[in-house]
Amino acid sequence: MAAAVWMLVSWLLAHWWVLIVLAAVGAVTATGWIHRRQQQRAWDRTRQQALRYGLPELDALHHRDFEYAVRDLMRRDGCTDARQIGGAGDNGADVLATDPLGRTWVIQCKHRRDGDRGSAVGTPDLQRVNGTARQLYGADVVLVVTNGRFSTRCQPLAAQLHMHLADRRTLATWASSGRPLWELLPKVPPPRKGRQESGD
Image (cartoon, rainbow, N blue to C red; front, top):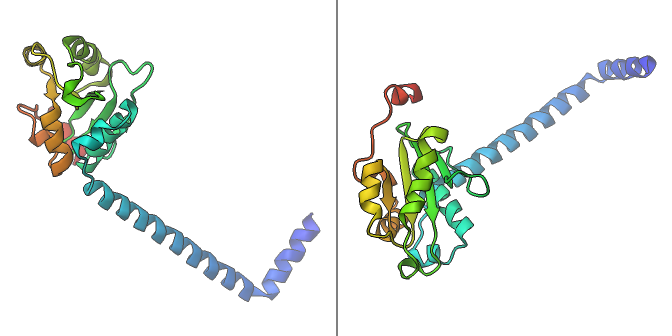
């Protein structure tokens, strides 16, 4: 093996121009790969920024796809770390995200196949996510979003628990307008002290 390596090194030293050609090919290949990655990322950002949903489109989604749609809308609005975590053992959270001001969002998504004609989201749904959002996930903003409606008891309870609700009307504005959700919800808390500075 040592003899084979020595022969290869000797050959390359005698034909040094091969190394230059290989290096040039490698550089061109790497440059092309980097350029393609940059173009793909730029396209992904453009696609996310242009993301819009209509209510019929959201109504037609499977409940899991609705969670992914909410995740994508948060990403569109600048929450680059937004991720869907809904499923078994999610502890009431379906989407986690950090907004550009450093606030941590814990979102529970309640999809209704029949929209606002379906069953209302009730207070147990609020209590479930409220019981874990701050303790387990360090939430600054706890939100329940639905393409349907909330029962009449949800709004007073949400106010008591310092939670936010996004009903069908709010969802429609958010999904179709391109405005970030925190501009549409009342009394969204400011970033925790020092959170914004650490993110800058």
